[in-house]
Length: 489
Ligand SMILES: [Zn+2]
Image 1 (tube, rainbow, N blue to C red):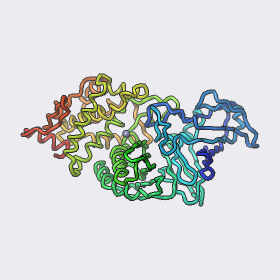
Image 2: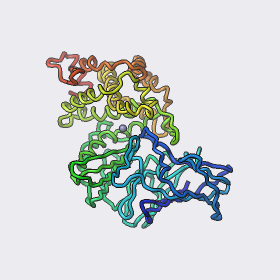
Image 3: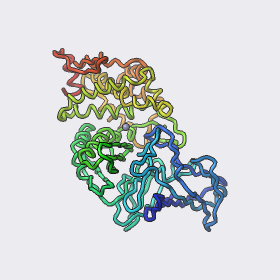
Image 4: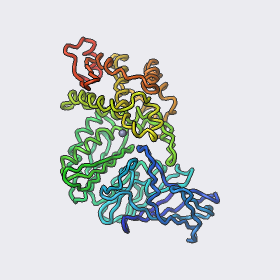
């Protein structure tokens, strides 16, 4: 699949896209745009912004195109098909008011003539039904002084054109691009090159400030993961739009090797830095899961009607658990106090959600249960905390979730998914047989999490009524020992 995107002639925020198609052997073929992408749990209808889609044969003769569904373009005489052309409007403009429930701004594209383009490929580029595994070449025509920050594989560039490659449509979608006049800083973390790229509609350069702010965090995260990170390159892409005083709104979408951060706020380098720090402390850990540890449902993602994986407790819960566990484990300033505070905050937030809804069911029904979705960051985190304590206790401090994630990464990988239904047993086989029952009770089932009991074993008192978390005054040697094993305190 050979696509061309033209950023040189953006007119009314519309870009021109052209696709040279591989030879098709069927009479009729459907060209699709996603309705959903990994990381979001609502239907988005990216095809809404696609205009004037036309198909041609090799001699430039137009072929018949129908649109039986909004996201589906049906092309007849497809065995003669050589080229598809269309225009795409952008999904948002400087944080305009298009926002509605289930709309993820960070999954949409936005572009402006002569200043920037945030490219989420899923909103610009379609695929043939059943052919999303074909390799992709993408040529982007852009102003000579623009740089495209991305973790896509680069081919040869010319003064106004970049060539990128991806092994599949899924890989393409997982690697957005931020195009603008360069404002980039590179950090070398472990053996990984981390790019921080920014655009602000104020014209101000932001990348250096952001990079300085997150560098110590990234170094601690890398150390927590064992020093060497499982990726060669990572990219933080930051889009900033000036907002009115006291108006802050931001969102972000994680990818396997990059994070797209969108922020509207006054031009305040402290606020910009804090926002990216907050996102990075969670999103960067996604290089472990789902990148390296994910199920077949993610590997073979269906962009129209995905089958959800039952393991959000792992993808989001474990990622968020690492986010709160890392600072205390690494002995960062204030790590212990803020760890206890984060537990208290999450307990309070969790009390607003339906505790009878099993995490596995919430995961499988993530699209229907949007009202409960946020609980994967709360209850999902606590399940991982309990699992860590359980493993530490059984192994006399030798094994915890950090080790488990390392071992699962070694067993699986970016191209080697696990079978969705088998993971609980796999983890029990790798650790202790009793862990299978742990999953039955607290992930598949809806048994109340025994947080008070479990944390008391580590000398921490939880008052679930007042959402208060404090230390036991005189811990027993057993309590002190487990706490040391678990959080180095
Ligand atoms: Zn996440």
